[in-house]
Image 1 (cartoon, helix red, strand yellow):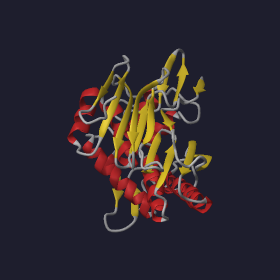
Image 2 (cartoon, one colour; image 1 turned 90 degrees about the horizontal axis):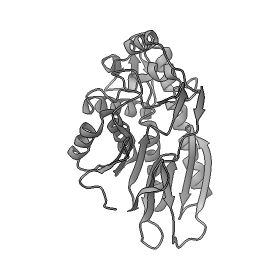
Image 3 (spheres, helix red, strand yellow; image 1 turned 90 degrees about the vertical axis):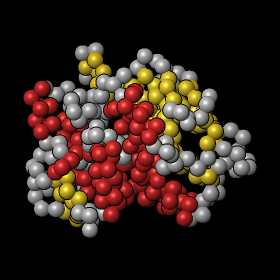
Image 4 (tube, one colour; image 1 turned 60 degrees about the vertical axis):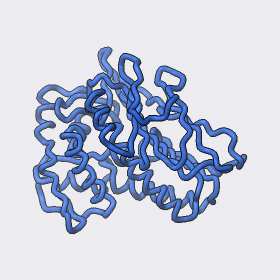
Length: 319
């Protein structure tokens, strides 16, 4: 069994910037490479942004002992616990997404994520293991107090995983912080999540390429003050006995999603929305996923199918 390295899904094409040396810092956080690039800001802005990323990771990681997500799993079946406002906000959003996607995007998928252990190298579960893990899913048993910052998992063995939402949520919060500090131009790059602050110096858009996992670019977009997020079945996976098992798990089957969609890139105003929709569309498949995108007024998407075809929603920027 071998865990393979993820393929970078988005390639920044930063050309012609009027500031020759933007302020850039890269750190390994959120189980990915995080790069912040500021065209008008200082080291203190970067310090504050990375401190925020670390704090939110410490709340939302299912693996970090003492995080809100970790404590929810540890207290499953017991009394409600106090959680941070940020965790509360994300869990409420998860409940809304569950309804929007008719149960395909389910933050109580924690037991399945732990069972497959993609981040730890991968484990191919038995049918008995899968059946037991699926029994411990259930959004109806995630209780989030509407009046205070408390939550509970109401059955032992349950667990929450917000991996389909956390990076997008964190990117949005970082942008809020930086703009409140006066930053007007920059790039927040959390792995496959790109969030832009304003435009490039000189009042020109950023050029961002959507990378083809087979090589080259699927599309180059001219964007400003928007989010571009890609979720793909090639980003995290392991291989066993000639079969590849990826990280986007279907709560209905217990297995990695098999919908004929290899990757979805979502263009939207905010990164949380893009993060959620890109994963949801992978789970829903071509027809249902595209129908969902077309119903939403502020989101567009590019689908890369497993047969190599590329499909775009009606408002996605032309090539």
